[in-house]
Image (tube, rainbow, N blue to C red):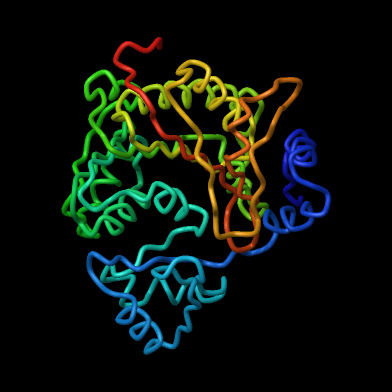
Length: 321
């Protein structure tokens, strides 16, 4: 029996995606995706990696908008995972959409950065590369098995500026108030952007109830993130889901809780498969600044994602929680 996406999800998708883009999105859930990777500049440089892969018969194609990123077709994935650059941890296999949040956060090399939901470490390690191994990255993960996977990756890929914390991210704001210049919340979510018909497990547990559960968790993480961020600092919120309840709705609640403290900054993303943040959903109007957020539609080149960049304009030491 052929797997099918949940009917309720498909109905929601038709409301979220313009009709002219729907075939592209549906193909992303059905067809094989390319494999993307980025150079681990803590261990190697772009030219060395490219030469090594070409010597093994691979022809990685550069990604126009990210100098350290490449992609190979689906049929070359196995060979890439057997290559010397992969074995030596010179490269990190990572979806192209997943590379966007660290680029949007854009931390300065000597900054103090909080990665609030860090496992398995793809964005943590990318941040370490962007910061040239300098500054400080506090990488937090609450789930013990995921924490140890994060720890193994940080050690294997050689990130000297990462400090690891097995801790509940919702509590960090209380213990480290206004301590960080940048905060990344790549939140746990319903993962709709990763659905694929070849792997029914990716959508087996999807439900409106799960969406509501994730939204509650995301809001608590965002409150902690705001409390952890210094005035003038930058917060990036990211999910790999399409659900407005987990994206615009959560941020709308956050903006109204911290009224006058946060502002949403415009995003100029280098991809064509994006939509602006929603103005409303199911009768609920959202904060007008959320039009600056971006929903990344899934394609055969990347998974679906949601991104929003916020700046903290005032202290929250006495702000209402």
